[in-house]
Amino acid sequence: MKTRPAVLVLSILIASGLLPEVAASQSPAFESDTSHDAAITALLPSAPEYVAPTQRTMVRNYVFDAFGPYPVGIAAFAAGINQLDNSPPEWKQGAEGYGKRFGSDFGMAAVTSTTRYALAELLREDTMYYRCECTGIVPRTRHAMISTLTGRRGPYGRRVFSFAALLSPYAGSTTAVYGWYPGRYGAKDALRMGSYNLLIYMGGNIGFEFFYSGPHSMLSRMHLSSQHGSPDPGPNH
Image 1 (cartoon, rainbow, N blue to C red):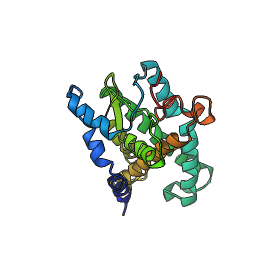
Image 2 (cartoon, rainbow, N blue to C red):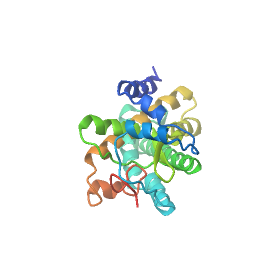
Image 3 (cartoon, one colour):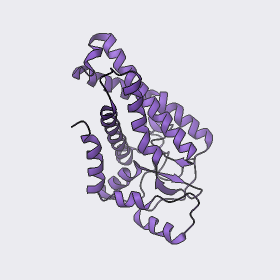
Image 4 (spheres, helix red, strand yellow):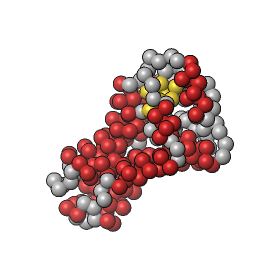
């Protein structure tokens, strides 16, 4: 029962026809087969000319995404939900219990973001979210869901399967389970929590796709410095 979120993630991807596309998008960094690249391009919506983000942008994004107002707000909300559910019960209620839950959720998010950026840097990936140039609810939703498990690599922004995107939610939940959660929690709980975090990230991508309205909007002001959203549908300058 505790592993159902992971099954739910896979079921969503399979039902949407995304797994074949994600698998097809993975190739070695040195590959230069133009026919293969053309096949990948045909699977994905068109995008403007790609410009990779600078190191300065990535550092700014990391600091904001790991420690800025967005993760603080999410942690405060999640801690409130956990407080209502009394989860975990060992932390009890009251201000002290809420403080432990808030610290736990904030720490989990910080580890998740740190892992995502570190792996992306190591693998030379760009894991920012770029809005789709396509139109229609279904194509744009598919694009947002595909982006949850993919990144961009190389000077032309070739889309590849991203281990950084896949593993980081589970790194955060595993650190929480074995770092500060009560001893009765284990690997299944880490898998369950990580899967929920992955679904939340997918929901965030969908939100960026449909509700992000440019550099001057309140939403973009909150997330422009975040890996999760780029300044416009195309390059991040």
